[in-house]
Amino acid sequence: MAKQCFFVGCDNNSTNNPEKLFLTVPQKVDRRKLWFEAVGRTYIPGKSLYCCEDHFDLEKDAENWIHFKLMGTRLMLKDNVVPRSMVRKETSSQFTPTSRKRKMETQQHSRGLRRKLFPEPTVPGTSQDVTEDVEELQLKTVASPSGIHCYTCFGTQYRLQAEEKLGFYRAIPEFIPDLTMVFSNLC
Image 1 (cartoon, rainbow, N blue to C red):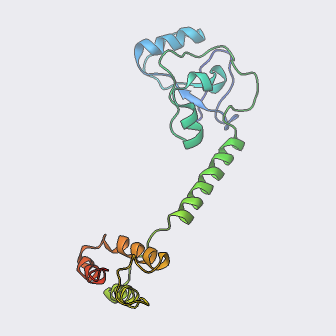
Image 2 (image 1 turned 90 degrees about the vertical axis):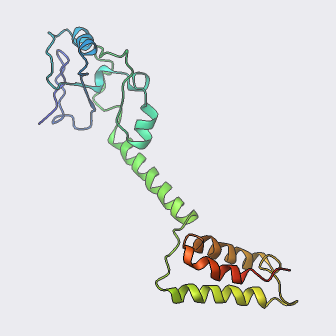
């Protein structure tokens, strides 16, 4: 069902203006009466009615305007706000499809960056994979040029590899004993 603006003299509806926001008229009796007085209508209890964005200055009237624009959360008006006679004369929405598109592009870009910076660790398919990783760490730990050393003594590259694997396998409790063997030979 199409949403029709309840403001007297306003012809906006969600069919003719799908890009416009339609805010629900409050259900609390005292606030609802204030809205009806502001638009010059007779009070009607209970029925779901809507008022289009043209009767608000959303940047000032909304509690969460920035959060709404960036995150797409439900728009919440401040408690003292009532609709006003045609705040906006333009036919375009305050929240245009262009800004919706830009918001989606920004969110997709952020997700892509997060995936690049923090890739999800792959779960080993079998315990054989874990054993191979542990054996590889043991070799790198023991086979340093100057004898037996802990993983921190022979280079950042091996240390980082060991820390990554240790961090991942700590999440899997049954593999912790194997890892303690890897790092038991300290300098």
